[in-house]
Image (tube, rainbow, N blue to C red; front, top):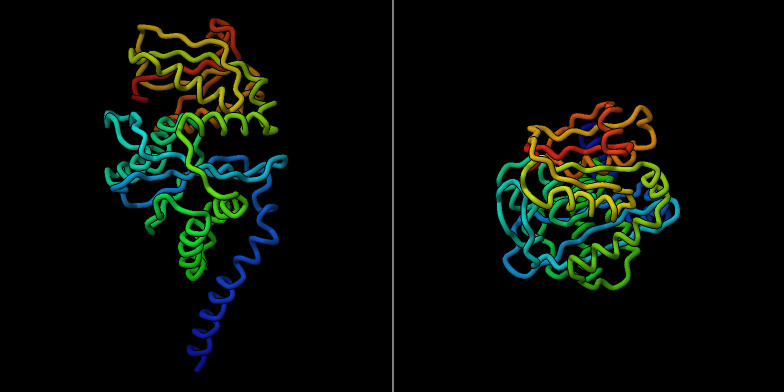
Amino acid sequence: MKKIILGLSIVLTAVLLIALTPLFLTKFGSKLLSGSDELYVLTSDQIPENTSTLYVAYTGSDQIQPRLFAIDGSEEVKVSGGYGQYKLASVAPLLKIEGKSEQETTAALARALGLPVSRIITLKEQIPQPATKSELVSVLYKSLFKQLANFTIPREELLFLEAVRQAPALEVSSLEESQKAIGRLLDLTAQVQQFSLCSVAIVNTTGEPGQARLLANMLERRGGRVIRITDIQEQSERTTINYHSEESSCESIISVVKTWFSKPLDISENPLETEKYRSQLVIFIGMDSI
């Protein structure tokens, strides 16, 4: 009898959690998101066969409400790691099939988007292509309920769902249009002031042209102040970050730089390099990044 009562209690608790989730989000969703200031990407386990859409959520800050961006996923992008050109919406599912780690996949997608992606949310459910707002809410609820039934609280999916709930009717934009719109949004965040306090120099040692410019573009969209980009012939095996003696003003920008790379970075104080490049932060892009 005790086992039966315990079982019924568990089932009723799960049902109650599921039933109250929409009410919880309606009442407290905005407070839940306040201050997170990140970009999340929603994708599926399955590589889409037809024209697809990639959904990117800005999770909000103390000053700005969450926003959702629907990006044309059929655009061809270069996938780092020697994979060549693939449709944007296929990048994350492809790398998962290849057995790449979460950090490797996030870095590859960040480069493909040209944006500082904090997290990829991968659903087992197929995402309708293109999805209406109600369809996107429905597929997120379905995934959310499965996890809540197992007493797991999927914070990232809650954050993404709140961005979808606050979005108007979804309109698909090109990658270039989305980059500009997200860049304008990120320029308004409070952290931009912290980013602009840190001057950045980027040195490409890979021999592959354009690597420094791509990273600079991403940092500038995030509000960073890149004062110099250059290529040198002396190759470095590992990507390194050198900072001046006062690292605190560059901590925020360092966290953004990390999203761009699939491997841990060597970070150290090196006033000689920062003085040489006349910046507070010097990023040496190494061979481990291509």
